[in-house]
Length: 99
Image (tube, rainbow, N blue to C red; front, side, top):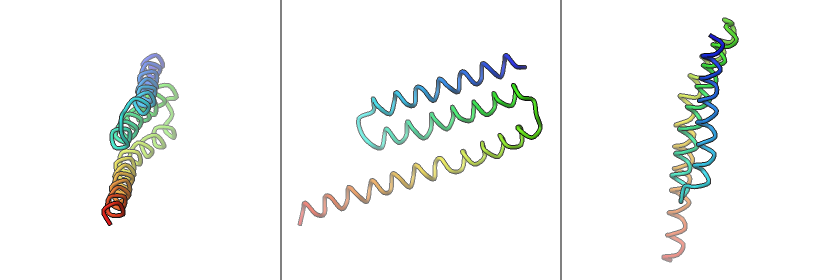
C-alpha cells in the first residue's frame, strides 16, 4: 500500500508542477485562472489520497476527506469570484475609456 501511495503522491505532484508551468505559459488571466484552479486542486487531492495510503491512519483519513471536500467546494467558488472581479475591472476600464 505504501508504494501505491507514493505513486499517487508523485502523480499529484506532477499535476501541481504542470499547473505551475501552465500559469506561466497561458496568454491571459482567465486561462491562467482555469489552469491554476483545476490542476492544482486535483493535484492536491491526489496528494491527500496518497498520504492516506502511506499513513494508514483513521485520523489522517478523516482530515484528508474533509480537506478534499473543502477543496472541491472552495476552488470553483474562489475561481469564480476572481473571474467576476476581472470582468468588473475590464468593464470599468472600457467605460472610462469610452467616456
